[in-house]
Length: 289
Image (cartoon, rainbow, N blue to C red; front, side, top):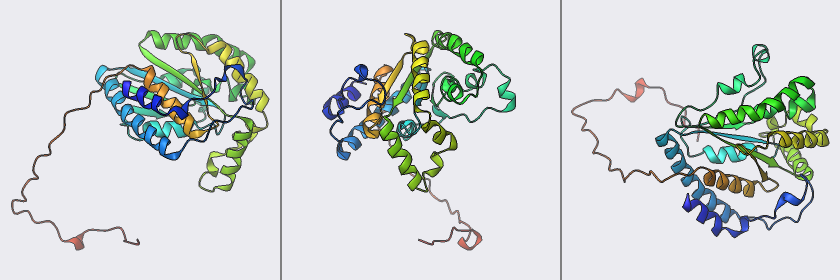
């Protein structure tokens, strides 16, 4: 953990202005563009630290939940991808639930999320979470007023219960400006490999910017609790957002380096007269390239 903090401190370009005195989407002086060389160096260092964190979570039997919420195209998926690139998917698992089934719609609201919570030695990354009710469901009218009010009443107690049970809960909100979101939407429209990211729901949300802002502010007012506070990630710069979020994640869970000693590979077994079957008996992928 100390190495991660030292690495972040050495990249002074990562420091941004304090966003507390402005509202989401309000214009600010853009920081100097982060050089690719700095970004790649810091990301590589953090990914090594993430492996150390993973091994500490496994060894100590910790249970960790990390929630990623925010505007569409704010960069949640990008940071999740960078976090998980070098990790064991059996220990660090991404949960991105789809639309609830008819059966799930009749269950207790939190029920399908509870089934995804970590066992000992696991870290779960929620790419959107139970906060759908306070955001898209509220704005798009997918829940009733009473269901929304019940969520606001019970969500803080639900999260306190998780913390009391020994689960570490980290919540990140990715904040992106109106102008930057529009630029990313247009970029997705032009790129056929990324167009799938722009769903009809994303398009509709674009026209309801103010409603989503109001819903987010109301959500924070009810659910920004001491046991599981919200952490806002300034996300107009994807690279800065990734580094800042990963740095904060590493600093939020104390861990030790459990890197094993250098491994010496044993010599390969001798064939002992074994004869492999002829190549003609196997099917090979055509070598087009």
